[in-house]
Each structure stands twice: as C-alpha cells, then as structure tokens.
Amino acid sequence: MAIAAVAALLPLHLGCSDAAPRWPANSLRAHPRRGGIRGRRRSPPCAANSLHPSGNPRAHHHDPAPKAPGGDVGGGRGLNGGATAKPDHAPPSQRRRASRDVEEEAWGLLRESVVSYCGSPVGTIAACDPNDASPLNYDQVFIRDFVPSGIAFLLKGEHEIVRNFILHTLQLQSWEKTIDCHSPGQGLMPASFKVRVIPLDGGDDGATEEVLDPDFGEAAIGRVAPVDSGLWWIILLRAYGKCSGDLSFHERVDVQTGIKLILKLCLADGFDMFPTLLVTDGSCMMDRRMGIHGHPLEIQALFYSALLSAREMLTPEDGSADLIRALNSRLMALSFHIREYYWLEKRKLNEIYRYKTEEYSYDAVNKFNIYPDQIPPWLVEWIPLKGGYFIGNLQPAHMDFRFFSLGNFWSIVSSLATADQSHAILDLVEAKWSDLVAEMPMKICYPALEDQEWKFITGSDPKNT
Image (tube, rainbow, N blue to C red; front, top):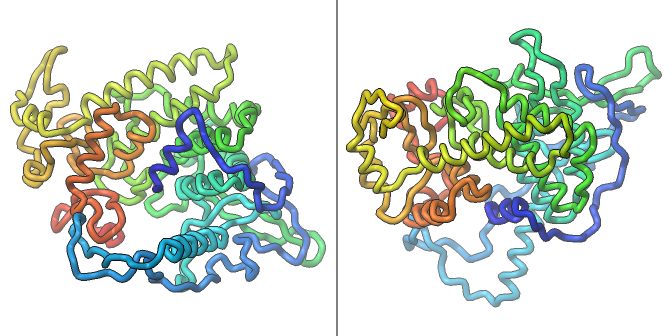
C-alpha cells in the first residue's frame, strides 16, 4: 500500500481528494535565515512541538500491540515463512469497521506528532515514544521522515501542512557560499529542524519567540551531512503541486532558486568519473554505518527521481539553459549506468563468474575489474531463475550484492527500472517472501550482517542489529 500510495503521486496525472484541509489557514511568516527562522509570540508560550492539547508531543499513551483486524494468529506457516492467520468468519461489515478503526488510530497518532510553528503546522516529529525520557533528535522534524507523512496528508486533501513544510525548509536551506570546511555547502538542505521557544532579550515579562533551529549534520550522530534531504524535498515539491493543483507554486522565485541550488550542488564537477552520486556512509536513510559508502542504490534512485521532477518544474529562462542541458545529459547517463551495471539476475551472475580481470581497454567487458571470488556463497542459491534486482552499490573492484528495499522499490516508482526489470524485482520479492518479509515488515536490507563482518562494517554499532 505504501508503494502504491507513493507511486500514485509520481505519474503526470494525479487523483486526489477534494476535501477541505482541517488545519487553520494561518499565514506563513518568511524571515531571512540568521541562525534559524524566528516568529515572535507573546506569553503564554505556545506548544511549539505539537498540536496535542497537553503540549507534549509524546503525551499519547496507547496499546503498543493492537490486534489485527483479520483474527488471531494461528500456528500454521504461510508463504512468508511466518504464522498464518486463521480463517476470518466475521461478516464483511465487521471487517470493514475493524479496518476503519485501525486507520483512525493511525491518523490519530499521526496528528499527535504534528509540529506547529507560529500557529501553523510545519511537519511531524520523527518518533513519539511516551516512555523515552531522552529522545535525542527523534523529537525533531526530519525531511526524509516527513515525506511519507506529507504524502498521506496530500492524499487526504490536507495540503497546508505540506506547503508550510516546503516553504520553511526552503528558508532553512544554506544559500551562502561555503568558505570553510565547517559550513554547509551552498544548496544543502538540513537533515532536520526543531521548533524552540526562547525568551526575548529585553522584552516584556514572559515574552517569547519561536525559532526554527536546523541541523545540517553538525549535531547529528556521526556528524554526517544529509545527501538525500534535497532530493526528497524536490520530490515532495512536485507531489504537492500535482496533488493540490497549485502548479504555479513551484514558479515562485524562492522555490526556483532552491531547486537550482540543489541541482548545482548535485551536478557539480568533481573527481568522480561516474554519473552516479558519490556519497559517504550514513548520509541517507541508512544514517549509520552500513557499508554503503560509494554509490549506493538508494541515493541514485532518489537522484534520478529528483532530476525528473526538477526538469518538469524548472521555468525556461536564459539562466536555466545550461542547467537544464546538464540535467538532461545526466539523466541519460545515469539511467543507462544503473540499468546496465547495477542489474543482477541469474544470467548476469553467470557472466560475472566468467569475467576476465585486469582488462586495460576501452572495450573491456569487466569495466569495474570485479573479481568473481567476491560473489558471496549465499547469492548463488538465493537468486531465483525468474527475477532479479539492482545491487546495493557499485564501484571499482566492488559490488555490494545485498538487496536494498528502498532503492529497488523507488527504482520501480520512478521508472528508473525498465518495465521488464520492474516485473523481475517483484517476481524476486514474491519468490523470496520468506526472506524479505517473513514475520516482520519488509526488511530494509537482506541479508543481515553477522559476526566479524558486522563488527568491521558497522563499527560494532549496537543500533545496527
């Protein structure tokens, strides 16, 4: 359902609800960024972190293990290797009512995670655990984490929160040219932001103001700058325009400037010889060491999707001609590179086994000097005859053969994968359901790292277990 909901926003035609937004139509206040965005507010201070009546974003208590609407779990084993549900003999009306109850509970939890700024909703916090006394930065609004929330609001017809989010994160974007290695690069979007209520210096008694405090990675665990934030921002911007019908929104001067700065940052010249983006480990959804440094599939799929979205939204003008030309060139090279070199199926695996190494030629078959000995033993028996997938990473003398869910599914959603490749990915998921889903939700990565490999790649990080 999640993939289908996201996919519905990406094609040119979008069908969305015409329901009126439930949020109060408060106006935005645009302020130049000087250490954050400020909005003045008199006492008593507003609940800056939530629209929840208590003012506490983690004040909601609920049953952590709600019952599934389909009945109790039996002892049988299903296709996914997990327990199968007993036959549901409840009448259809009761099943529909149970489904509505689950959906209403989900919407209730989502609304309680909403963050407000100057009386207007601007996003949702990353996590809402009432038992967590030290939430670290999970009580902040993350750009990547808000995207599924934003899509849900768009499909519900509640567009204002997404519009506010887009504009406020745009005001937090780094527009200044980097002058040293400790400043965010021009065009970089923050990983997250937090609404802080601070007292006014020399003001009236009890006078406060709200400040949007961005984090570009300076305070993040591992101090890694977010590569994916700008890409997600462009994707959500296009989804907002399509779903709300406000197609003129992206023509605003500040929005156009934000798009161009992100593109210039991503398309900047560097030492890399590939059309893919070179990133460090922990710079995307996998924000901890997972051995994905280099050219991870997730970033490339988001990059391709963001380039397509930006090409559609950029206004034609003299100043954009070179940028659009570079964008089109990169799109062609990137799609060929991923479809040709990242794709793996049984036939391609047999080809890799027969690779010659140390080829010095423009016509070399083994262009990345991949040694067949690096093919992991589990892969030979695991990959089905019918099906295939995009490998997790590719760089000189290295192929990461792990299956990464987000990168493969987003390749389908964005049409980075061809029609045949899309069907093959879904065939593989169906054939390997017991490994990729089993008794848990869809795995982010398969297979899991174990023993010494886990220690070396993750740095013995207990969060990566």
